[in-house]
Every structure is written in structure tokens, then in C-alpha cells.
Length: 420
Image (cartoon, rainbow, N blue to C red; front, side, top):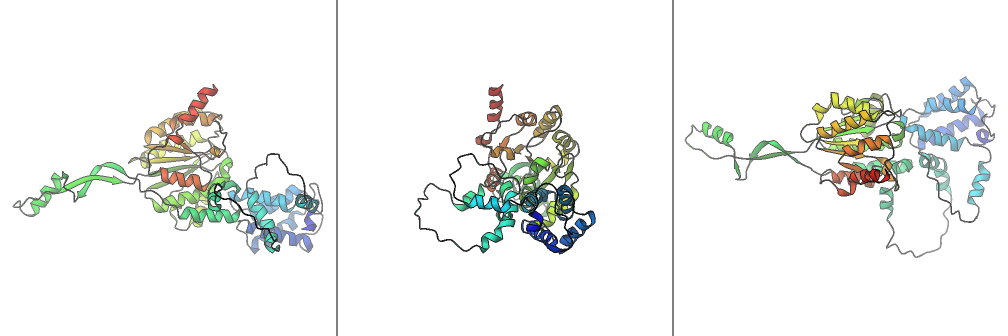
């Protein structure tokens, strides 16, 4: 990596990209991205070298744009590419910085800065192979009292999706595939035949008697029919939610496989119905179909307008039979809140239960200060976090239970009144 990283500033070395160490570095960079989870083959690496040959190696921004145009095929891969590019094509004092990091020093008591989105996957792809080839160190035996510590699986379940590495995301997808969903039921106004002698079914009794000519009348019984309520999901795919979108879609794919009548809608600046795409058996194929159907991935957010479109075109079709609505968004509305409040109220009145899933609740000191959050909170039944496996497991269990007081939005409404 010396040929590409031996110069600082914004200008890359004027070396012919088609041969020599510079072309090798592009090959190594493509392999790094593939290890980080991007779908890159030998043809894409050859195209990247040809693209750099065509535009010439000039500014760092042009070079990054050329590689981005060739290597990035999915919206959610942008953050990983940017972080990998920053780590791979960095300044020439990389070795000195790594030596300084590994040298003994006084403990740093400052609060650690939170990792950037995609940083774990990019750094693991760059340094993971080196760590694997390093000889094992002999560690002294230390006795640890683990009575008040968490197991590795518990730590993994509480890990934020945005900070997971590529291997951890793959493990999270497998965990979601084995998620146990409750068999929640709601009573309808229809009846079905029953073997319990409780409620006589007059029509069924008369039909059975007519078959025998009326000589013998044996009572038939009925009971109230119970069904699994429809589940309607409205998921935000704007730029602020991009680090959670793909893992959320895997969760929704599991819901679609294990439940009947699951309707999935994605929205940013417009509303897209991807219920048909989510019915593919293969989850990766379903994700690719959703990405092809959505035109505004990782863009802005117009929650009020998209809810208005849903209420006008889809509410009567999918919100029958006691439907439960999952609204996945951070509530960061870019427009006015009057329309948002009105459409949220209309949506709340049209469904049996409205659950708002907000990844911003992962912060302990979260306060509903954004205008969009203030407009939406009065019209939801539950306000839940959705940023790790533990929160998704709690959500799956909550679908078959009654409303939880621990996630009552009135707690945050009281916070708003107290702040006012």
C-alpha cells in the first residue's frame, strides 16, 4: 500500500495506474471491500483500473469518485466504502501512528468517541488478516469472578447494528432467521364449527337436518373465529436511517415468512410498496428486489406526505381485521409538522395498535426535542427502541402481549410538559 499512501494532501501520486504497485493497490482495495461485505468480483476490479486510466490520477476526490462509481452497487454500502477508502488511502504517516498506538502510554481518561458507521466492517477487512497471521501471545492465567458480568452472546445481542462488523452482521441475520414469533390472535365477528357444546349454530343444525329429510335433528355448535391480525410495516429508508435499513429488511423478511398478511412499505420522500418483493424465499434476492423497486433510498425524509399517501391509497386495503402497524423512523421530519400530526392521528384511528420503533432511543439521555418527534408522540401506543437484536426480540414478544407500561409514550409527553 506504499505506492498509494506515500503522499499526503489531496493529490495522489502521478504513477500510471495500469501497471506497477498502484494497480496492485487497487486490486488489494477491491479485495478489502469484498471482505467487508460488498459484492465485488474480478470484473469490477478490472473496471476500476480502467476507469482510473481513463480519467487519469489527479485529485483525491476524482479518484474516490471513480472507484465509488465502480465498486458501490447498493445504497447501504456507501458508508463502508467511505470508511474503507479513508483507512486504505490515508497519509504516509500511517506506520508512525500505528507504532504510537501500540507503544506503552498513560491511560486515557477521556470519553471514547463513538465509532463511525461502517468503521468496524472496514477496519476488520483491512486488519483482520494481519491479526489472524499474528502468532498467539502467551497470556498469564487470571482468575475472574464472572458472577456480575455479561456473556458474549448477551453483549452481541446488545450491540448496535451500525457498529457491527461484516461477520457480526452475518451472525445477526442468522439469529433473526431463528427468531420465535408469538401466535397472537384477535377475535372476529365470524364463527367456525366447534366440537365444544357451548353455542348452538342454528344454520348448521338446519342444514344437517335437511340432509336427513328432517327426521333427525342433531345440534351443531360454533365458536368465535380467531385470526392472526395483519401486520403493516412502514419503514424509513432515508439517509439518517441507512445504517439500519438492511438489517431491518432482514427482520421484515422473517416476519413475512412466518406470518400471514404482512404488508411492507418503504418511504423516504415517497412511498413504495415492497410486500411482493419481500415474499421471495431467499433473503438476499428479496433485498435486491427491494433496492431495485425503491427510487429514493438514503435520501431525504417527508414523513407527513408519505403517511398522507398511505392513508389515502392503502389504509382501507391493509388496515382491516385489527391490524397492527409498525412505524420505523427516527422522526426527523424535514417539512412542517401540522400535516404530520394530522396524518399520524388518522393512522392511529385506523389501526388497532400503532408501535413506533425509533433507533434514537438507544441513547440513554434521549429527549423528544425534534419537532417531528413532538408531533408524532401523542398518536402512538408504544414507543420502542430498535437498534440491536435484543430490541427486536423484545418487539417480537410484544406482538403477542398487551401494551407495556415500560414503553408508554406518555413518559416522554410528560417530559415535554416538564421542559415547557
